[in-house]
Image (cartoon, rainbow, N blue to C red; front, side, top):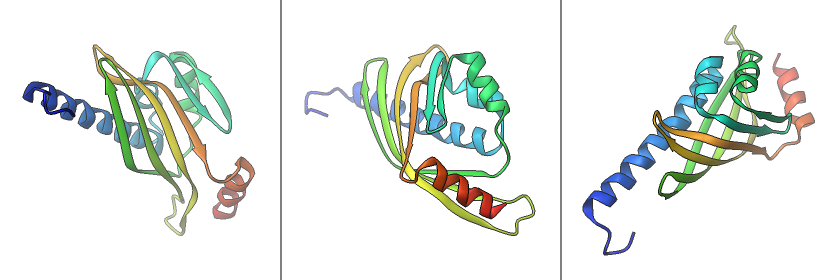
Length: 150
């Protein structure tokens, strides 16, 4: 921030960054808790979600994708970098993706990577217009680790 930035602008920037970080946390909890509605609600109506498994676009497809989520994921995000430009923002963070069993007999980290996000300020607050997950392991490596955990 430049020295000519007003106190109100600085406070708005801080508030926006906190809201975006909370959106990321709510997204992680939605996936980890298999809450399809909350997962889809973290995106704009025409939002795009991209992983090694493919691309999901739009509210109905996001909701359907969310309904396929199974118990076991544990998302941990860290090292957030947020850049805001008016009603648009970008966010990148490091991802640690864990896997847990319902019987609590085992858990492990199955992947690391990054999220690359584009966000839009909406009437309901900040939402992902695009969220891309890039993992350091290939899809086969992640699936093999998940299968081993059971």
